[in-house]
Image (cartoon, rainbow, N blue to C red; front, top):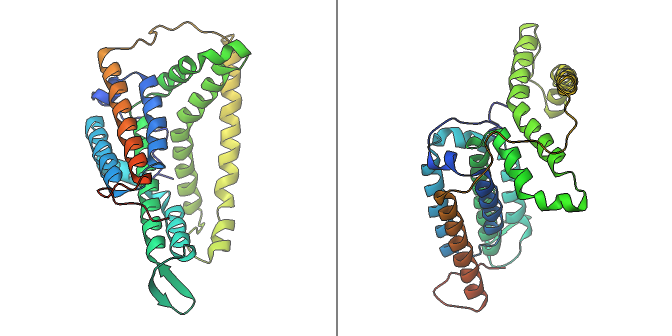
Length: 276
């Protein structure tokens, strides 16, 4: 659980930290869409350069970002194996009942890159944005839904509280794990089923602690007469020049990626096509 980077804010004075949270939310959405649109090596190279520039501009240690990849290792491995074994095409390796095709290898490679880039790109959002700012950005971005009586403020508040308490619950889980190990609990030996059963002494106290914290938080909010609805902001969100420039960069990324996608579908020879 110490490898989870979502919800952890890394304090730094970088250009990404100073960006408006609405810009970072929009940029993250564009990044996710672009990741699942690219289908050639040229667009992959453009996205790689863009991601490298974002990581460099965030000033977040690269090894801290890599820690988040450990949490998706089994998902990544499962995705790669399934694509290698299930996609049919030109045979590259044939051993018994196992057949690996050229198309399957390409699809597996692209899927692995997508998942890795997805985790790295979305981790930057929470590492460079405080939960309160993220909540304000969500509320401001989807404020138009208030006209149809959609509880935008309440949902944004819930998401901010969830992000805020992820590091707290991780720290609580580590404390419970160390306490159970001190009492002789073994979480590493045995098969997968036995190890899963051994997690019960951790999960039960963790859920009890989470419910206790939720109750205390609800009581504190009620004591401060919080009933949802509109709130005044001490620092209202306002776009700056750097925010408009960031929007321009996102627009260029979208146009380039979509242009390459259309060029690939039309069979332009200088783009290496994705074999379906």
